[in-house]
Image (cartoon, rainbow, N blue to C red):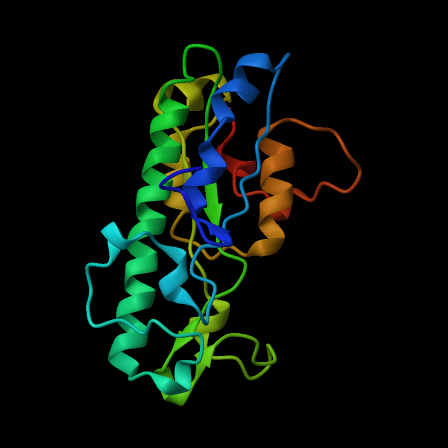
Length: 198
């Protein structure tokens, strides 16, 4: 795909290519999971198109030891900038589906990344010793007001809930609860929506 794929890799926006056809052909409700490359190191410079090379100089090598910390951080920040663009385009796509569906989006990283804090880089330090940069990750939910009404979610309550810690264990239970899927594996204490559904 021109502009989205170069050499042996594609940028995350390729995940949106053809998604309109998937939605158009869907029968009934739909859950779509998009698994990004995101900011996975060490080759941060390969995670964004040239147009997103705003923070310079960058580390443009696979071996971080061959780069200065500033170059690594700049390449990482460029990848963050591109992730922001990807999420913005995903939300714009979902906005276009609101007539047919109650739309919502969640975003969560699988792990954090060290970019030189305390002399550490990348990820994978055993959890018991890992710095917060590797274990505290962003998670957010986007849901327009009309979708919240359709999904019976009190957004005011959810905004209050957002101030409390959440974790990866909460993702499954929150999705199952939001979609009202009945399963004996569901644990309401891990559902961020549990106290916020009407």
